Image (cartoon, rainbow, N blue to C red; front, side, top):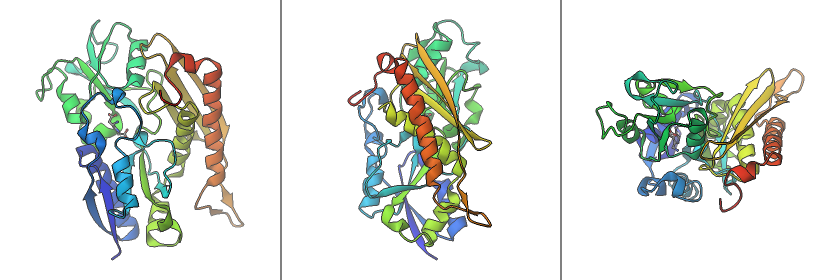
Length: 334
Ligand SMILES: NCc1[nH]cc(CCC(=O)O)c1CC(=O)O
């Protein structure tokens, strides 16, 4: 049986995500999968995520492991992946994404509307803070970080931590993967909170050289794992982020959806205190790249990705025309 080594961070979330991809690769390509643990800078640093500066703290060590041949495949949370391409590496699969929503995990089953005035809500994300405060200006947003269990433990009555908060906001997808949907008291719809670009999706990255033969077992298994509508949605979301020159800590939300061969992309740029939100959307038809007679699927839907990318760029330009850069810290060095 061909062997493949998958690199992962050692966090519970990374391990479950990697485990799912490992199972998929074993099923699709009959691989003997070995899991390799890689320690990343993001696991060591303890400061607020918003103050770490720069993007991709969770990603660099995994990419180094790939480039140095210590593993063959790396699984990332797509929202943690910088938008700049990594020389020598390719995201060969974006599997079907989970519900990309954010989720409120509050004490006593409370929803966002039901939280009392002045309630303390924990998040380290300026995007979540801004949209929370836009919906409920009376809340007190508390900057927190740490893994999912640490954050859930800070909710009063959770029984697992100090309980100094009334609620926290986390990605629903991460909670689903960890089997902790029991903690969710409200899934925040896109009308209230647009997720981070790429939230809920995974990126399966490999050395570009290993894809040279598209018929190789690894390339074929990755092509089968790739979910085209998810890929087009995240390409649009990430093109917007790149055009805005916004990092993962910027108060920018975006959600792409594919429906009837159309990419619908919605985005928000916010002032972190929630006093101003700019929200816009675009819809652009995509071709699904069927070719030949009889039609055969293209293995690499290049044309579609270009259309999805320009949807993201056009929406970013629209937001910039409306003053996005005056609201939020965007641009290099932001
Ligand atoms: N930045 C941390 C991170 N990276 C990916 C997820 C959740 C899973 C996902 O979005 O795919 C999380 C935790 C969170 O935001 O709650």
